[in-house]
Length: 428
Image 1: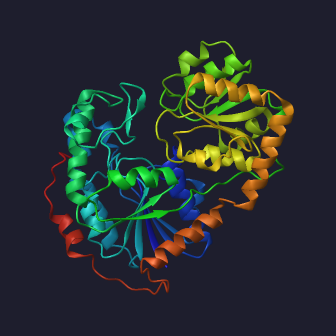
Image 2: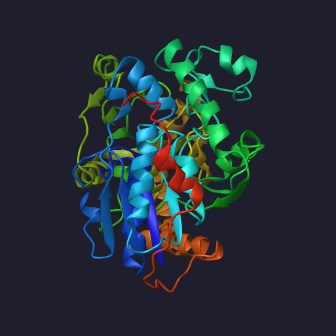
Image 3: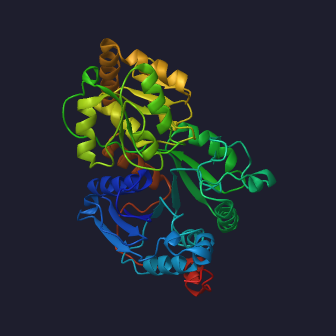
C-alpha cells in the first residue's frame, strides 16, 4: 500500500501537524509506503526519518508572510500551489492508493482540492477544526468569546465581526470558504473526525457536500515510565497556546480561587496578563520530553477549559495515559475521554465550576484515585500509534486502496493534470 500524506509543515508546531507526522510514522512502522508532501519548507521532524517514508517539499510560502493583497489573493485561491502539487503527484514513481490531507489553510488554499479530487484515488481529510465549513475555522465568535451558532456563509455569518484578527481578514476568509465550496461541491470526499462531537456538529455544517464520515481517534504517544503521582503535584497545569478561547485566563482565576498555583507551559497573547497575576508561573514552550517530566513532577491535574468547540487536544489524552487527572471543558471533544468524577472532571468553561473541580483535587486521596483510574483505563483502551495506524489501514483498505504496493505509474486524472495549465490568480 502506498499513501500520500499532505500537510503544510513537517515539524510539530501544532496538533494537526503532530497528528500528520505521527500518522506517517505509524503507517511506515506498519509496513505502508508513505510519501509525505510538505508544502512549506522547513526542517523535518525526526519522526519522518524512516526507510518507508519519502519526503517531498513543494517549496511554497506561508501566504500570510506575503502581506497585503498578495496574501489575501493566495489565501483565497493559490494557483501556484495547485500547479506544484499536481506536478509533485505526477512525478511520484508509484501511484498512491489514497491521499490524506491534514492542512490546507496556510498556503495550499482551496485551489488544491480539484487537483486532489482529480488524482483518481480516494481523498481523505482529517478535520482538526471546522475550516471545511466555517470561515474563521473554529466556529467561534471571537468578538463575543463564545461558540458560534450561525449557519456558515449565511447573511448573519458574513455580517458577524467574529474574526480573531480583523473585519478584513473575515472577508478574505469568507471568500476563501466560497471558493472552497465551489472547488469541493459534488466531488467525493472522505472526512475523518477525531471526536464524536465533531461528527455531530460537522454533519450539519457540511450539508450539501458529497461527504462520507469516518471516526478515528488521534494517536497518543507518552514517554515511557511509571504512572504519575498527581497527589504529590503542587499546581494545576495548562499546556498550549495562552489564549482566551482556550481558557488560559480561566485556569489562572479558578486555581487562585481554589488556593492552588497555576503552571503554564506555552506562550501566546495572554502571557503578559498571566505573568502579572499572583500564584501564576509561566515557563514557555518546552520540548515534549521536558513537558512530561514537568507534569509528572508537578501537576495535580491538567486543565483544558476551552471556550470553543475544540475537537481533540492531544494533551488531554496524553495526560490521562500518564495517570494525571484532567479537568476538561464540556465544549471540548476530548472531554468524551474524561470520565467525570472517575478520571477527572468535565465542567463548563467558567471560573466557578473549574474552581470547584480544582478544590476537590486538593484532597490527595481524590487526586491519587482519579490519576490511578485514568492510567488503568488508558491501558484498557489504548490510543497508541499502532492502534491509530491500524484504523487508518482499515479505512484505506475499505476505500479500495491497492494493498499490493505493486510498482506502477499512471497519469493523473484529467482534472488534476489540467491544474498545471490554470492561470495564476494569486499574484505569486
